[in-house]
Structure formats: structure tokens, C-alpha cells
Image (cartoon, rainbow, N blue to C red; front, side):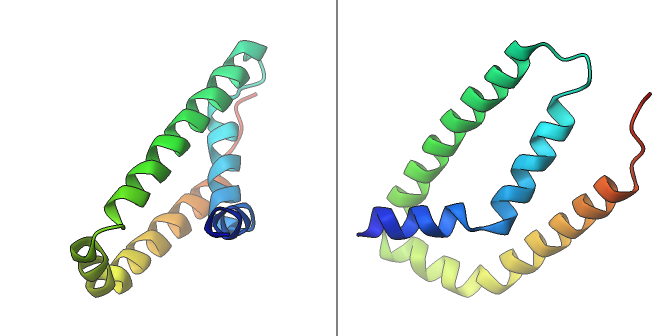
Length: 97
């Protein structure tokens, strides 16, 4: 039940999709070999699994949940600023020709 719920949240998260698009647009150039795409997909998949395992372990403790509850507003604001700046950079960047 929790796995399915987490999967649905992750797969419908616009931040995750935008991050994936940014990684692929920065990591793959016009002349990049196919192996580069494979390395990016495998590498990001491994990092995702490791990250989610760390989150699961960390948030299984009451102390981390309490600290996050107090800091959530500031964390969300910082991430909002970061993604806004990253989005503006992507929108205003010119591709090399």
C-alpha cells in the first residue's frame, strides 16, 4: 500500500519530471554517444534508489520527523527558489550550434 502510494506521488511529481528533463538536456549533447544516455539512466536510477532508502530510514525516526516538521517551510521555500532559478536559466539559455 505505501509503496504504491509513494510510486504514484513520485511519478506525478512535476519537480521530478523537470529535474529529469534538466539532467537529460545538460547531460546529452547533439554529439553524445548512446552510451552516455545509458550511463545517465543507470546512474540516476542507482542514486534514486539510494536516496529513497536513506529517506525511508531517516524518516522512520521520530526525531528526524520532528526536525523536518519544524524546517519544512524553509526547505520548501529554498527548493522553490532553486527550481525557479534553474527554470529561468533553462528558458533563457541558448543552445550551442
